[in-house]
Length: 318
Ligand code: TXA
Ligand code: MG
Image 1 (tube, rainbow, N blue to C red):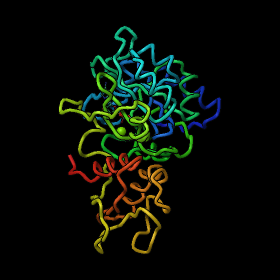
Image 2 (cartoon, rainbow, N blue to C red; image 1 turned 30 degrees about the vertical axis):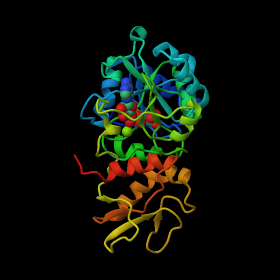
Image 3 (cartoon, rainbow, N blue to C red; image 1 turned 90 degrees about the vertical axis):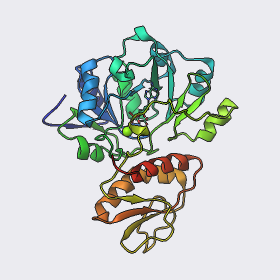
Image 4 (cartoon, helix red, strand yellow; image 1 turned 135 degrees about the horizontal axis):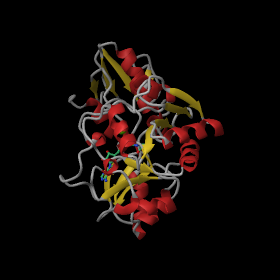
């Protein structure tokens, strides 16, 4: 769906009712979640879901995450094993996506699942996302609300920078608290970490009482798993402890004259995750042709998701 004008809606009852009505008539509505802003469409409506791919200029029809308000509504679309229910009980609502067997008769558009017999489901914690899902009353397919391959949005203004004029509306719910996309766990055999994200893998392992498998080569290739993704305009270099003079250095720790930009002044991984995509955008503006050089970030907890996104930002462009 191509709208000449994209409305910015307030996160009030009226704004949410309007957003739900737009979704119900097949419109595309961007909304805040605790991870990043999502670009939502009715997951049962083929045309609306196709509109997501068109608005993002996604090169391929990759499967999307279905957003629902609670575990009971998830069970209408997916088969939830006891082990999956344990994770859901511990971490939903929250930044965890589970890949589960699809209930084929449940009426999801095959575009959402890319024709697979599995479906990725998530129950977001953000109060605006929760209120929108309840007002709409159906499943909402939502990838991050950015043009394909670019930096994910963590504020309504970021959404408009990339998609204004291409979507019906964005609900302005302020800055996202977590700042990186959800952790995706496949629950089709041994629980498998498909994408590190806003829920630390360590917490999942503790809840399961068993390690997470890592994907085999047969895993699905989708945007979040493409080598180059989250790419700013400027080139990116990683693990830089001594930047060259012509580089814009982004630190992890107190800002200094050499590193005016930092992911976290206090070296805190939660703060760094929340700031990541915003800092990437800011660095891109300031770089002005220079390379953006990131200081090393510890590779545990949320640091795994941060380093995953930074590696993709630094990968050779497609
Ligand atoms: O935090 C998030 O997860 C955000 C917010 C908006 O909720 N959404 C998001 O969606 O990151 P997206 O489209 O960027 O990521 C979808 C990922 C893809 O990388 C794809 O690999 C995986 O979900 N996925 C979806 N369906 C799948 C399936 N049936 N099997 C395996 N992976 C699947
Ligand atoms: Mg994305």
